[in-house]
Image (cartoon, rainbow, N blue to C red; front, side, top):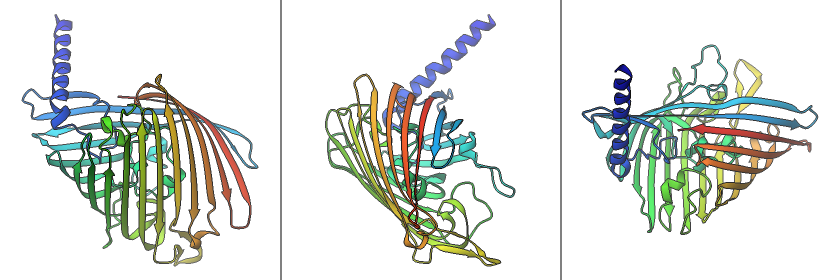
Length: 406
């Protein structure tokens, strides 16, 4: 009898979750562009009997093994859990009031624990108010409306990691207010406007208050209508778009009095610097073929290098410069995808003697078992670094990765 009762309870929860998911599929799909996941599925859902509360639970992990060979070094093997994420989202009281929480547990996500610094477990903790399908407003910590690849979840990537330019020039997560105006239609010109006012200090920062804020603005244009199944938010044409789909976007941020080498990311600077970031993206998909291109840059009107006032021999710098990324792929009908990516990164003149220009070429093959949520990836990557003194360094790695989640 006890087993029968447990089975009935589980069935009831499952049916309520399914009903809730169907009810919210069109009028309250938690496809908010600030959230870190593409929306193929909704995970495991629970809705209260009075429908005043809903919670969806998701997890994902990336396990990888890499063989690394750098110039003048012996080859090395690396095995790690690259990402391990747990996410909760839903609404409380009214479907117009939503929330999203994402936690990370892998060492590569949390980072090294340092004395006096916060542990970076919290990635997203944000509340939303969405009065209708065209507007949503948020308050809390989440991704800023920056470059396309950063806004996409790392679980929605074709290759095992984002580009070298994303690693250096992205604006990533921050705490603040955001307002998004969404105007997406299936078969006609569509557009989105997004804006944010945030602290400019990055995620999980405390005790570093100042009078500088970061202001971010972005526009997205879809000349032929929106991508199917929110295809803007994941790489590759898994849907095999029946009609050509194209997106152009541009974003700008001014981060006033930034205290870190990459604005919201990086080590602490010895002096504050105001940083200006420009991000331009294009994406195309049609019948399994996909292409992406992006430009990113960061500048500062001040001298990029900062010095320790207590020891002038000690210094660090704002990472200024620019880069281009080019990525093409084809996904077969059996869901084997072949990807090539090329990146160019040029550092700013102020820091040319301290950091190399870089060229990166990647080749990848991915097998999608269940869309991006369950896939097997292989990647061969080559880096060439050009130093100021004329030296060149060639590095490469071969990687195997499995991603699974709900």
